[in-house]
Length: 346
Image 1 (cartoon, rainbow, N blue to C red):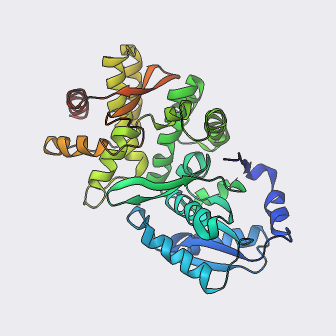
Image 2: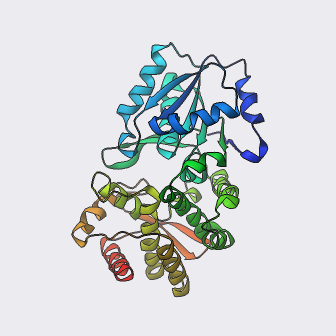
Image 3: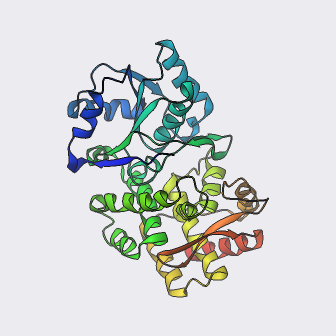
């Protein structure tokens, strides 16, 4: 998988306009959902000259991150005879950049695509690193490929329309980057939670540094999944219920649970566990997890993509800033972690 550049707003619009002048592009398509078509596409049109483009509109939300939605994209591309020189611009959050990248990578065995993330979560995580895909049933990102965009263009102007809960959701991935790789970044994010814009590029740089060493997640890149083995299972379990969580909200819960597992299994110092718990608890309105749901959530961890030979694996911390991967996880361990979580939110 090729690496790709991430351009930030302080570089201006030159990288994007240079691509738009590429004579090798036969047709340009912009993929949006209903929200980004209304709020973000006019902003993008004001900043850059997209020339002639065709808008492809898909439904909004994680529940539409499916092969069926990919069919909409492929039908629209086929309807106007898009060829292998076409360009797809994915304008939206993580659902849209994941799905759009996957659809582009499969259409005629691959057309070029660009990611323009419009949520904090997508800026610091989903739109970089070359992971694309869709959910399969209740299993997140179960179908997908590694495929890098031409580049990702991160512009903070799109964050102006984001509600506070979406900002907090994205910040969870920034907290994660600090916990697994850089204690200074962790301290900066939790200390400046109401002014995160200055730290977006640092968070992206951490992810890029990890991905550059292991593009297709054979080893080190797995550390980017800290909080996700249990966080994804919780997110999936509650996805179609009134208790549904944003991705970052579920990952915040997952990070507390997996920090506790790190304390019991890997010797994470108690003071680090307390620090992680205290700060996440102060920054997020943590949900209650019903004990009746524990077993079903544990069952969902069996579908985690890091698992090997039927063994559930998680990413743990030896200390803040030092992560290890492929740690075996037993159901009894998870139940103890849930007991710890229940105690701290009472």
